Length: 258
Image (cartoon, rainbow, N blue to C red; front, side, top):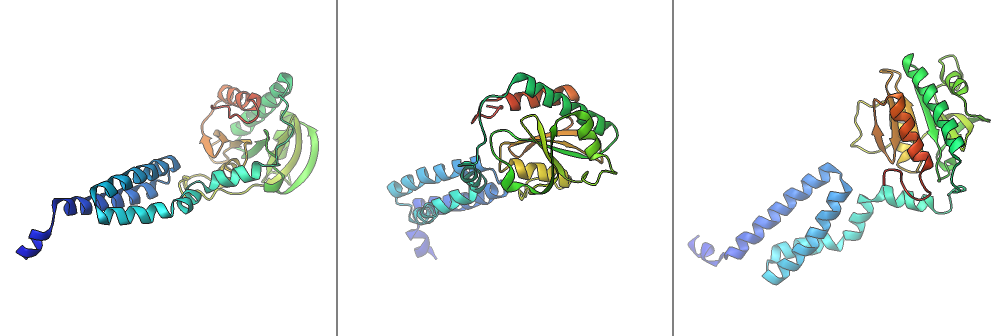
């Protein structure tokens, strides 16, 4: 036993400790599912690999070489949503000329008034507002309407006795083009399980395209706005109008948040 201990160098103990720490941190990061943190972890692993080579930490060097050898696969897994979004964006952009202020104001007023009216009566709603990317590849079913967007029309569509009240409406440049549409549900495991189908559909669509979605909860009557897979809940009418105006007026290729 003493002979074995005599052969162990302090660098060997450091090597083992660093490997254990790296595995522990890796498991923690994977549970968090945060792409930015994982990217930083890959950069840290690359720098640590250089240090391990210079310090002759063989076990750590072997582990890091194996990890970095699969960096491309890991990056694809981490950023699969963004990669899919970029591929789908190519060739699927609508006319990106700036919207007229009057057009934006009319749509914002109509959607805001309808959302407030429906929320006051605890009637669920799902309203999709197209920006630069086409929505056709992600929309299932749907009844063609092609009418000017008004609060009265939006409200009537979502009333319980309407045959198309369960689906989403699609608004494209001041026109209500489709109603009763089914949207792709999010597959993100980090999304709260308390969210219903409408909210999950809104998140799922905005993970793929740059549309913004207004959701009215049937259970609570709260109004939410979803953009890029992120949901902002419990908005009042003024907040909703302000956010919608900002998103719809933003320049092509640039998010209103940035």
